[in-house]
Image 1: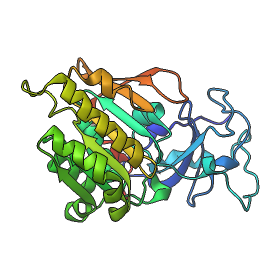
Image 2 (image 1 turned 180 degrees about the vertical axis):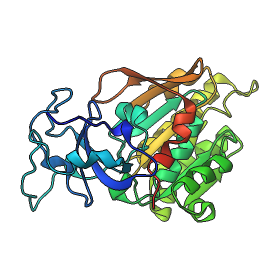
Image 3 (image 1 turned 180 degrees about the horizontal axis):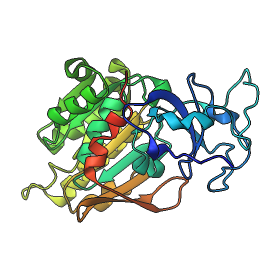
Image 4 (image 1 turned 30 degrees about the vertical axis):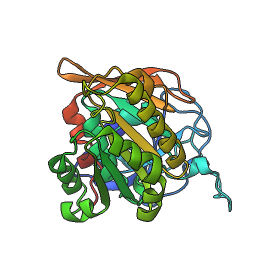
Length: 310
């Protein structure tokens, strides 16, 4: 039996290949110079035994030289002739390029609302805003990003770092982010409920990020009944806009309105410090069981570098 390889074994200075791997355990099925549909594999994964039909993903990554034995089809992952019609599940999809979170969040698709809570969610928001610009075949949307900064959490230095890791000039990347700064909860509600869908259409965006949505709802003079009324308007606006885009909302600091917002999403992940690590807990998902992943935040910040464009 040939040696098994896994996606996390990729290297920074190897030759780039389209790597097909099991979405359950990250075991590599094959690596190719040219992209093909992920839905053309069947059989069982040699590592975890799961079915590869509908359970295969693809990324463009640099791979080690000793992966020569996976440059041909595995005996248990035979490719069929490419059909004229390809199901949507076989097409490339948006990802963060960070397997520890992608395994919890996938699919990240238009029509979904994802809420990320905890301080590390700000880093994820910056990464998502950059990756939306990437070509579809490399896990992006080939789209501009609409970034609503609700709590002055935008970090242009981190965003620029992600852009440089991808070989993109930061200034060019920033031009594809339509950034909207709001200063009160009423401005946020007006933007989201009255203009969000139209602004997304005008900029051709498939990703909307609302950073620190509750950052302006902790003012002591804000009446709770009024705050909940305003949040109702925000929820209605998000529901309308998500018909045409993926929406990622971050909740950075604890708020007494957390339970209200966390009842909205299709997917909810709690990100919390765990010593030197970040603990990511999948609390809610439309069709995935709860789960937990642990990683260092420095790994997340380096995620883009491992998949850098050449």
